[in-house]
Amino acid sequence: MNPSKLLIAGSLIFSGLTAATAEPARPNILLLYADDLGYGDLGCYQKDSKIPTPHLDRLASQGLRFTDAHSSSGICTPSRYAMLTGRHHWRDFHGIDNGFDKPVFKPGRLTLQEMLRRKGYTTACIGKWHLGWDWDSIRKPGSPAHSKQHDAFDWSKPFRGGPLDQGFDHYFGDNVINFPPYAWIENDRLPAVPDITFHSTGKAPKEGRWECRDGPGRSDWDFYQVLPTLTQKGVQYLRSRKGTDQPFFLYFPLPSPHAPIVPNDDFDGRSRAGAYGDFVVQTDDACGQLLAALAETGLDANTLVIFSADNGPELYAYPRDVEFNHWSAAPLRGLKRDLYEGGHRVPTILRWPGITRPGTVCDALFAQIDLMATLASHLGFELPADSAEDSHDFLPFLKQETTKPPRTTMVHNTFKDSYAIRHHDWVLIDAKSGAAQPTPAAWMRKHKVPNHHDQPAGLYNLREDLGQRHNLAQAHPEKVAELRSLLQQIRSQGHSAPRLAGN
Image (cartoon, rainbow, N blue to C red; front, top):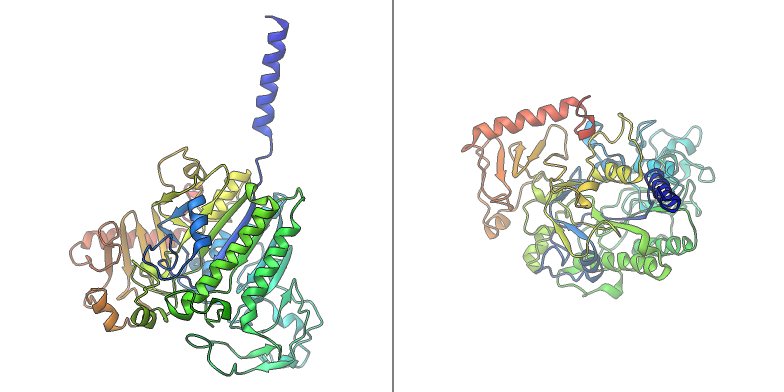
């Protein structure tokens, strides 16, 4: 062989080996996570929405928008836990952290952020945590075990169990907007010590109730400054990453549009759906500020942006539908806490440079718990058998290497002993009703939903009946039996991830 050709061939072989063994590209990751946002609130999901959301609509036009994406639960804490572990919450617990509960993570549980940190990422959480802390680690000796008085704690000490113990390098937030302590938390300390025990907020917020629990707080605390302050901190963090080589993961769980509904005055009247709508506008604006910070720093070219929400909208959606003719969960049935689709089918957008194509709409079934396996696949991280037990790898599907959707089945749950299962187009609600609380009769009439309380379960074909109006349980008892059997199998086997199928 000609020596020059041999040299070229050898170079190509060496180049191929280098490419094959090279570390995979590590995109920055920005995860925007809204709180109690309806499937039909964003303009890119509901053209008739009365709430302008230009920034998130633009994000959807630049990336991929899922139409059939789901949180693990219909309430806050379980959905967050599931997303950050790749494991269905109901394998471990069902309820929310009530402000002073212990951390929900068991020792040794691998989290998404810890996985990323092992791959060289710096990790930060700015916003709502709601996954537990060990407040007893700073409780004063002799103070009652369950006291939430502000003087029952030594606030000068660092406390354990929070984000820094679960894989994050940095945290800034207030834990939960309507739970104590009503003060800023930075990493594992409170920069400003609580000086009152909070009992009342005075006048009502702009819509609904305060829904705030009693406990320690700052006398100068202003609920209206929570979202603006977090947004400012998020922008500062992104700007600080300019010029650095280390990839980052910023988890930005927004406090909005969860109650208390407190849009700043500048946003009053910006929607045609009342104060809640205005709060969604401000939520969209906050996301826009973070996306603008990515663009101005040039980080957007190598940043995967994910937007989603923890569950459907709160019960205030019913009076909002009456007063403003805006149904936040449109075109779905159900709200926060419900097994119906509106309780857990959430807006979900991915903008992943080099992976997703602009303006793509994807109808495949997707779950937030799938983020962990998908990112592990991209980064070449081998997930242990005792982690991400329910996470499906979507990377080949997103890269269009296959047209077969990775997920065809998902279990829905909010409360203990009340489950639903999705399998292909069918959903079985294995309960008397998919609603956690009685649905107003006026809403049922307006949206033409018949009453099916005489049937022992709910069976719906979502391809033909996305709004879950027609219960087919009595017409298809064999399908009910099939789905119940599948539900029991998934619950009992301890996993549903395809990689664990042989276990």
